[in-house]
Length: 203
View 1 (spheres, helix red, strand yellow):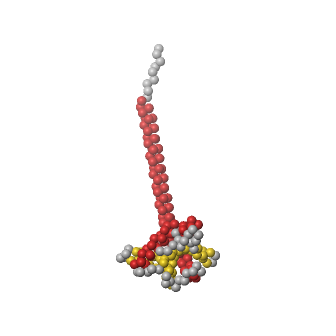
View 2 (tube, rainbow, N blue to C red):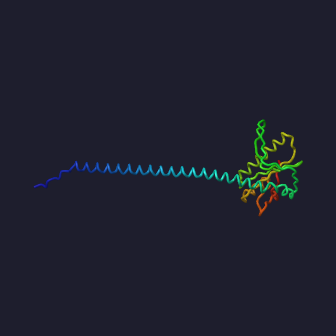
View 3 (cartoon, rainbow, N blue to C red):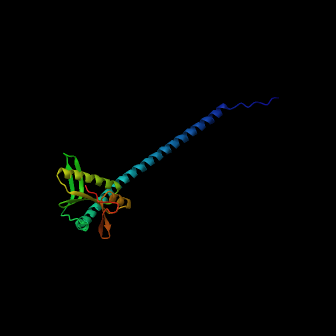
């Protein structure tokens, strides 16, 4: 006699496959839900970090302004005497000077403006001067020279940059550009004159 052939239980097989598909679909949906939840958490963390950065920037800005004010009060009263030691006799000191000429499109601000009959010294004060600040001061000096020419002011203009913290590379760059560098020294400050391969620049 021939052995009886086993008839496949198609319904049972179909039910098993369907159950596997449903379980796979459930797992995929769960994975997708978890991924969305993770994305939401990442976005929330990023949002909180952005808010923290904004608050920190605002606080640092206020702190920087206070440092700037402190530096001005420390430096300004002694600037004339310190520059006198370098051979300058400035008779007048102006603080927070604003140059604004709509006609000639000249707009700039000066922290300290020292002057006498034939020379002017423009001092920019920063908490921590960087290369951009130095380049900005060059642009400021050019604007002031243009404004002086428009007013028939033939005096020689020189520039200086003061900082609470002066990096070596920034100091070297400022001196190469012909600026005097003003930095803290103990309870007072020193003025470094461009020398050697550097020369004070006049505008």
